[in-house]
Image (cartoon, rainbow, N blue to C red):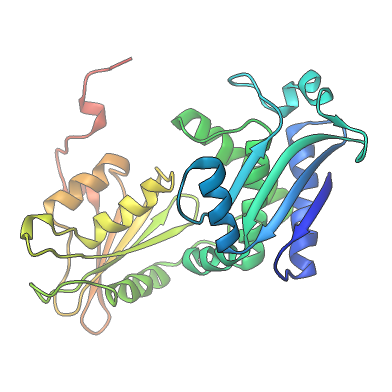
Length: 298
């Protein structure tokens, strides 16, 4: 893959080499035999914010933006679109131009810290994620999301940048205690933190956020799961919940929300001086009502 780099900010050579390797491997895994090219701009949050606002009418910074040149038919990706790729032949690069990627380096670093893995892994992931969009993948519908995630992991595994080794229970409990520090609980004085482990290895943290209108208070568990779902995650393996003085088993509302996505999730609680207990959600919410109970809408 020919990469046309635009470096607005300093970037380590090791990152660039890994991103190049990720791009080359993405084409190989996709089965594209023609030489291809992509323009990649590495910038700061301010620059990607401006691009996001100008081209997508979204007034905020983001991690990666993709601008494909190929208009793929539904269900078709680059490996099955040789004729379309030929139409994007660029004489200057002697390659088929797939499009442009813009990646925020501050977001690479921030998300690596948030998800608990290395900067190099996050840089590789965002490169692969963006290239998947340029090759016709998407993640709006559940089936498309699964296909795209599978493609991403195949590429990352091939370059030895798959998700870092799994988070241990002890690490997850510590992350829940860390999340508790951000609690906004001026009314009850009962601070709670949660750390939600996704099936793909990511961890999302949340805290309880109270409100003067008490009914609008949101629990730490739901804060974490809503953050994860809004990022496209749908599969969860475990959740750790932390409080200071008593076991913070999830309330009924949180049990129901967890049941929507992970009826068999492991629920761990920790409090006091390292006290901890664990129980599967199926025991905390027996005879549960979930999506499978609704009539088929297809």
